[in-house]
Length: 608
Image 1: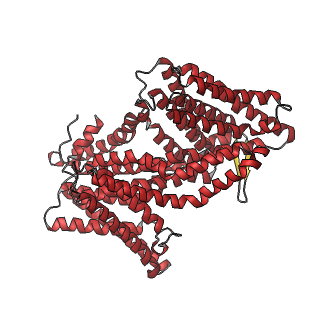
Image 2 (image 1 turned 120 degrees about the vertical axis):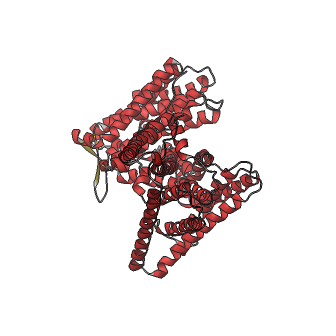
Image 3 (image 1 turned 30 degrees about the vertical axis):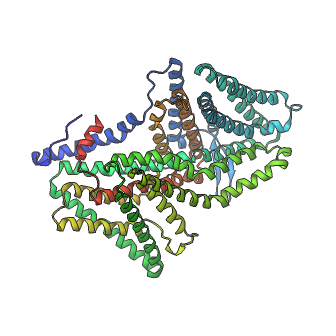
């Protein structure tokens, strides 16, 4: 463990400035690049040689996907463009190289996913097989519809490949794992399905002059976005944690290398800046509408803050608490609950996605007449009518789970789940079409105003009592920086925007793939439900599939798809699942519930 750097009293003038610049430069690399790769990277040590070789193959494909994302515009310039979709505003064009590249990525992704699920728990094994089978049927339905009389070679090839995958899952699943052999067999069978389907579509295009296969490929790839949306939502949670670390590291670095009066000046400057922004925007909003129209939104934001404080006071006064408050434990609790909460919250959407897969698989005339219309109705019902009630049910259920955790003395879980429940319910009630729509507000100004009031009162109270320590000044700066980051929606969509914002949508997707690539530590663990090799292959298959969908959206300039997969999903994750963590840390620091800490020592320890 490295020792914390000496305070500024032992450094003067140029030496202090150089030390600050050195720590700022090395800190960015150490904490936000190398730290992310080291903590979240895959560990292939101890694995079989064949497994390591296949893993390096998958990682190489992922690197190629990132390269394709970065140079998407160059690909569009270097290759001919094909019209794949049209709307009243503009046409949607794709470079010719994109089609074989995407097909290869899909084959590799599904092969890794199937190989990973083969020796996993029974439910995981057959759910993955079912998803693949439904997706494969959507690709080969034209061949099945044409029948074996017109195209016997294609028909029996795809039927044999589907049967081969089913046989592998039936007989090799319970048997001893042979990763190399299983991967090779699955890769061959999956390739037959996708390549024959693509070749059949291209032959029909040449024969009839109608690019039906292009439109079909576009649709099949776009709707796969429903499968990766939960992971895109989780990225919003990760960015909330990234923002916390960035603000904490910035305030601690300044506190450790500059005189105390500089921290005080910085605190006053931050307060002045945030109050100026809020008051200026409030005056502008009133000038555009009226005071009465704005009053409802600001009252709604005030009620939200009072509810947050109510949950906090209830949890922190619990006598059944078994452990002291800890900010790292608060973060770990959030990250532990985020994934199941996202899956639960998106359960209706995932079920609608599954029904859409079944509907597409039943698109053959006879099957659709018998089942497809009912499935289509159910899918539309789930998408349009069932989502809102389900979100109310989940939010209320999470509130009940918070009460259970509170009674059991698990205060970190109770606080996070309680804040999630309150924020989710209040957001649903005060939506523009909610029951309390008069309290609906737009933007961050109303919420930031009331948080500034609370923070200002707390700082002034401690200052008047002579209790405003340097650490509390740094905490106040931390919270002001976080409030400022709430407004940076581009940052929330992609934390690389400050450095790479000039690159446009390509780096939005790159930032997302980077985030996925730095969360491989999940695949380093082993369990009976998910063995280590299964985790590794499932992880690689999922991120390559996500990369294929993102790459398609970026390369075709599908602005709606990019916004939905990046901005929309990430913002939902940040607002719904990330803000409860940040609000909990706000109140814990304001009330001094977190024990005194040497944050620079902790930061130095993290870097070793």
